Length: 173
Image (cartoon, rainbow, N blue to C red):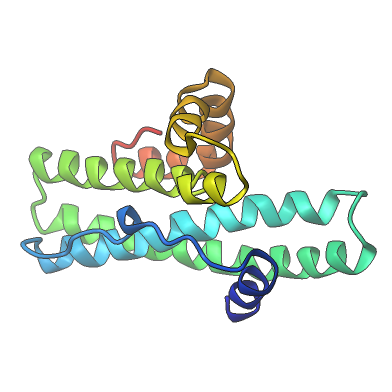
C-alpha cells in the first residue's frame, strides 16, 4: 500500500480519498460490527485481486509488471481464502447467536452500500477536474449510470456477491 500511495503521490500528485468508504461503526452490535469489518476487507481484497489478475495477463505491460502482478495475485489468493473462511465463520456465529431477518437485511444493506461505494471510488470527480475535464461530477454520474459500467462492476464483484449471497448475506451491486 505504501508503494502504491507513493506512486500515486509521485505521478498523480495526490490520492483521492472517499469518505463513503469509511463506514459508521457507532451503534452496531459488536459481533455484527466484526463481521462487517472483515466482510469489507474481503470485498477490498477481491477488487484488488480482480485487477491484479488482469494486469498479470496484460501483454501490453512490461514483463516485470506482469510478474509482480502474478506474484501479488498468488499471495492475494491466500488472503481471499482466509478472508472468506473468516467471514463465513463470523456470519455463522451471528446466525447461531440469533441474528434475525432484520439483522440479515441490515448487514446486506451495509455491504451492498459498501460494494457500490468501493466501485464508485474509481470515479472520483476531483480526478476528472484535475485532468481538465469540465463538470467532473456530471461525468462521474453518467459513467456510473451507464449500463456497460454497471455490468462491468457486477463482473468485478460477482465472486464476492455470489459468496455472500451463498452464505446468506443478501447483497446486490
